[in-house]
Length: 98
Image (cartoon, rainbow, N blue to C red; front, side):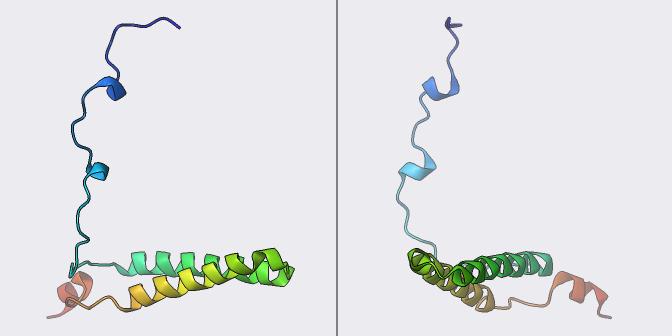
């Protein structure tokens, strides 16, 4: 393959990449989640639960760790979403009130 002589993106000096810098985790962030986003998360959790139940029905001892991790992951996600602090009424609700 012949070279065109042009610099490729990966050949340029990119400096410091975001992933190269170790920053402390941000705490006490305020995030909004819409009803649609919450429903999308719930749908994903249902998929995880269905996959876990499918593996359980197979009764394969090799799947035990996967089943435990699926259950624990779903529980952690559920706890995080349910633990989100309400920061005020949803914009749709605020606009509809007199």
